[in-house]
Amino acid sequence: MPSSPKVFHARHSPTSPFYSRRSSVLLFSCILFGISGFIFGLTSFLFTRPGFNCSIREPRSVKVVWERAGSSGGVFSGGTGATGGDEKRHKVMGFVGIQTGFASDGRRRSLRQTWLPSDREGLQRLEEATGLAFRFIIGKTNDKLKMSELKKEVAEYDDFLLLDIEEEYSRLPYKTLAFFKAAYALYDSEFYVKADDDIYLRPDRLSLLLAKERSHPQTYIGCMKKGPVFTDSKLKWYEPLSPLLGNEYFLHAYGPMYILSADVVASLVALKNNSFRMFSNEDVTIGAWMLAMNVNHENNKALCATDCTPTSIAVWDIPKCSGLCNPEKRMLELHNKESCTKTPTLPSDD
Image 1: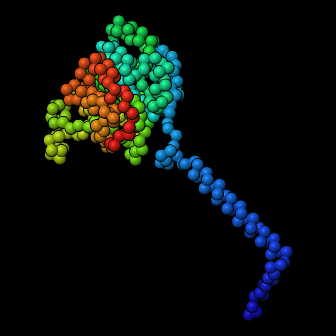
Image 2: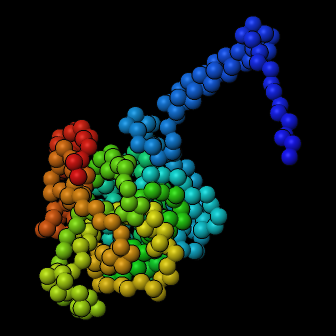
Image 3: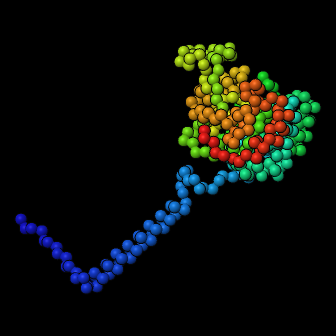
């Protein structure tokens, strides 16, 4: 069988034109590759990927748009500029809902004289500096006089989010759920903060706490506590687990202040109202929901300090009162203390 013909290629000498052209191409390719590598390395250094942990990145800020709108008759309405329709959600790092009531006008006055600016320009500067938005949260009442007084206050300060739910102390868990749903609809926020109107707050330090990197997307932040299983007869459903808990029920945050991440609130919003188990105590109710959702609990004692310290975020008279005792007076006293207003903002070790 004849063999296949062999094909021979001539070798080019180093002085041939072919060799010179090939050397030039190789040299040009090497130079081009080197320049490309330098540019890639430079851009990688200057522009980090989203989510890359870099200690010198730009601080997050926000500008809250001040608008005026009437009541929507929906789930929420009021001085936020929301109409309950397809309004654009404001982007913030944290939305702070200050829970208040019709008998708490004195507390609101004390807050506006201390850590919460009373004028719109001052409040906007605070929100831009911290990345946090602040609104008083209140429901409605059939008392026309009270509603008329509230309407005047809303017109004067424009710092309310009005819920379409009856304002009753016995129905605080329902108000809390309505708050989270309304806040989520209005604000595209990384965290949603529930705060009472009788605590002294350092917004700058709260901003630092929320800006920390966290690996768990579903997070529940608060000053955590435990309590006896059967102090509330409605907790009987938890009885089968009591041997595992050493006669204590689930860890949950004190009510005056706690924080839920956006993923947690999104899950609450997605559920139907009648799928929630409500208890008489609002903080126990939230704790039960967090247990059912298996979220990450982050315990931070700076959220329940009894006095102003270099790291305190929220100050209230734990355990004597559920907030500040005699809050209208104590709020002003704390604000006049140098340790409350003049100490620098330091990162917490928690």
